[in-house]
Length: 429
Ligand code: AMP
Image (tube, rainbow, N blue to C red; front, side):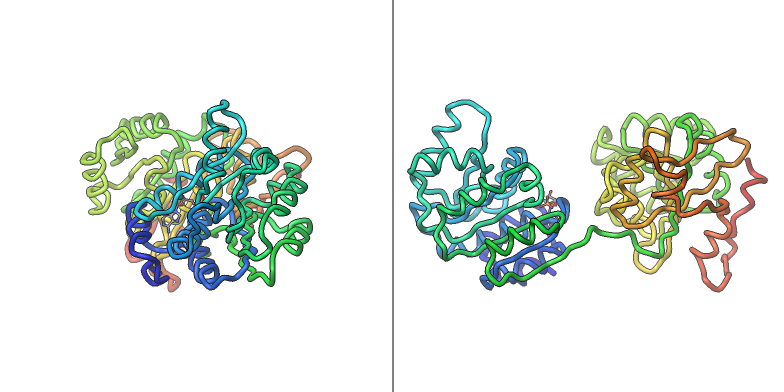
């Protein structure tokens, strides 16, 4: 769905375009029309879903028509100054071509910040993004112009309660006019959030956006290894699938991308690297080679994991564990585009076990672990977080690694490997 379809003001559409947004994210699709209608909202959504723009865009759009000049028109309460700054920046970009003004009000900094905030709050600012303690300090002085307030947003409400801000939030609300639209966003929905919602919201619409899950058709497996086993294992793995035309390998760090690509090239693999040290034309050239299948193996940092659409990647290998669940989903989502199935392997070193376990919890399923072939020596147990059974909490049972099975499942459910059938990896290593 495009942003035009929401019927947003032209000046706002310009800001959206300049921010590089093309289509609405799922939460934006659900939330924006409801906010435009005037509904109160309770939404469970995590960072990374586009939730900020989901509430900023309709608020800005409505304020273009209804802002009261010398008042605070909208108040966004957030747990941390970092989030306040981030939202203010996001808002600045989106509202750039509109007449909407805004300010972030947060603790720390020097006295000059306080004076600037005081001036803005006593003259009126269309959207104020604040942390609770600092806002109360201003409210207690009596100059904040809140009579015209139309919108209240509580962002990351669960985190605010965890940080002990309940009383502060209620105190801030006691200064606000009763008639207003209320929007509550929270990553989780424990009972205390529901109770807070009951106190603040009027007949809210409830929206649930779960974290994106990897498409079910991607065959995911993981090798639990020592860091030193990664290089020999990836060479072995690549040899066992050397009939694959397009293989994408992700590393979290540029340094690892360069080192691994060097190692693979010395072992005569048809591999090249892509990362932010390459200039735009070099990147485009590598991508072109990869897309046209002249280049078999592309080793990349996460710059490739989001958005870039390359069809028919046979295999994604996470040479290291990505930083969060979203990155994992984006990385492995490069395979299994459109109608094709895909495969993804992740190498988990001892240090990365906890991180991977967190990802498994986020995506809601353990990724099957396959044993490291004996020729590479003993491998570590999968035992993330103390006290868990090996393989538990993320085990998913051990399976034998056998690309042939995976490939047949991947390529064609009617057992037609189309002449691309893999060889037995055991004969290759
Ligand atoms: P958030 O979940 O609000 O923290 O947003 C996560 C990131 O997605 C931010 O960098 C936003 O600027 C970006 N973003 C939000 N909405 C869109 C969209 N419709 N298209 C592309 N990027 C977006």
